[in-house]
Length: 86
Length: 245
View (cartoon, chains in turn red, purple):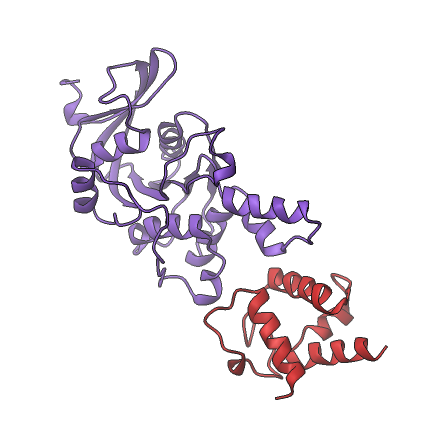
């Protein structure tokens, strides 16, 4: 697990009050929403806010691209990586 | 005069969870903690449980034990102040130009507790959320009894948490979190009467409406007369005691 992936997981846990879940329990490739971790639409907005606060990333609320970025921890990590390189 | 049957009830406050505990506390009151100890809410999945603030945990822990064998029941949710601690924290965030948490915003509405319970129980029955400055308890019961016209039973739940320090000079609240859940029924339970009329003597001037209704439910009083500015007000009593009062 790379440090960025771990950072993303900790951000998700902190932003969503997932007190009972350890970072190691979240799979890098599993879906975050509905299946997998079982997050919902309010969680998506909360993660969007956390991305904005921590990494200065602003996303459109309901675009297909945003859906792809939110698919998994790896997808979020790739988004953060690509923004950092710009 | 309105009649209904009280099928069951359950009330929660810090350290008070059973009728026996409530009764002994009402007879020999002592100051209650202002924090609800960590209610476990094991009936609710962990992923949903994190959404319950203290107000929601308090209300749910009173209501859920009454609903274990019931798939669907309409509800009347009554709170004088709602989630004021949460609302205040959002307002403080705005004052500091912080972006607002979508979760916090969604949970700060007055019907948030009704919504969370509906999701937790997968119960899409209608729910009404009300607030009242005076007579919250009798008005919640009035709303619930009205619902009995269309439903076999109705859940009526009254709940509040203490106001944050900032608001205390401007309004009253109990100094401890509490929730009182009651299952009203058309057919089963203790016959009760809710009445609006000339006020009888209040049992004790300083007791709050919550304490009056709890004394009635714990069989310490036959009638709960609710406070009113004028001489006319609400009272709740067991039907068997009607003539004595």
